[in-house]
Image (cartoon, rainbow, N blue to C red; front, side, top):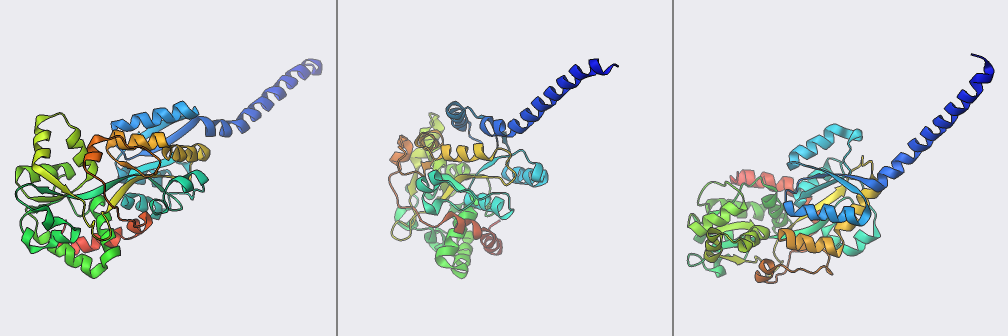
Amino acid sequence: MPSSRLAPLIAVLVVLAAGAAGAASASPAAAQEKVLNVYSARHYQTDEKLYADFTSQTGIRVNRIEGKEDELLERIKNEGAYSPADVLVTVDAARLGQADALGLFAPVRSKVLEQRIPANLRTDTWFAFSTRARVIVYRKGSVSPDDVRDYEDLAHPKLKGKVCVRSGSHPYNLSLGSALISHLGEAKTEEWARGFVANFARAPKGGDTDQIRAVAAGECQVALANTYYVARLMRSEKAEDKEVVGRIGVVWPNQRNRGTHVNVSGAGVLKAAPHREAAVKFLEYLASDSAQAHFADGNNEWPVVRTATVRNPALESLGKFTADGLNVGTLSRNTALAQKIFDRAGWR
């Protein structure tokens, strides 16, 4: 081909190449603003509004993958540096601590998060966005609430054959065990666990709602449960749920001393996050008053931000309480020891 005819073609190719290079260099910034990949172990339909509101406010589209906690952690580990995940959302300090121990979270510095989330409900790498208390549920007429004022009371011989609970390996119970270790020490926590196990009415099975129903049915008289399970039953229109609620009472443990144990729902930005800027924006959004109010109204949890308004009749009817102020990082560090103690005590 003559050189005179090659010149225009070469010029066109140069322009196209420059345009492609410019688009490639701009694509990471565009992705930062428009896309967020969330791996979530929260399986609540009410969270849909959270994601929709975030997209509405920011224009960032949320791609969400839901799964069980262990499955998501394994997936992120296997994906390694090529993981598309930007944020991991899950429940309980034990699970968040596990992800942190695996080195999955990246440190986050944000004035918004530091100002809005209390220091005891955050670490350098992950943040709590809602809380739920672990309360004692008792059968009215069978057990006096004065007999179950503290967690320590659950190990008293007077409750022999009256207690039901879910597995000792569940994070909700491991976090409680972690708190007890912090307050009582390892030896006394194991003594408590052995007394607690000796009071079981049956082998641990099911979830928290199953324990509440078992108390109402008289299968046992005392159980441990997270408050949002209680509130969910209270808000139900089903006759059988109303009957369950009518037969049970709820005690805020340890109000005379350190306060009731609370566990959390939280999130962190992942180390390999391809959209880190959007990820931090998402965490800051979760700390907004509107998102915080949704946690309370949508899933019967308490917001962590003090200025957020709670309008949940079920939660309000449970009354106010003093929460244990232990740092969530401390809870997550003690879970492995709590598991060993529960195993030795026979709480499977």
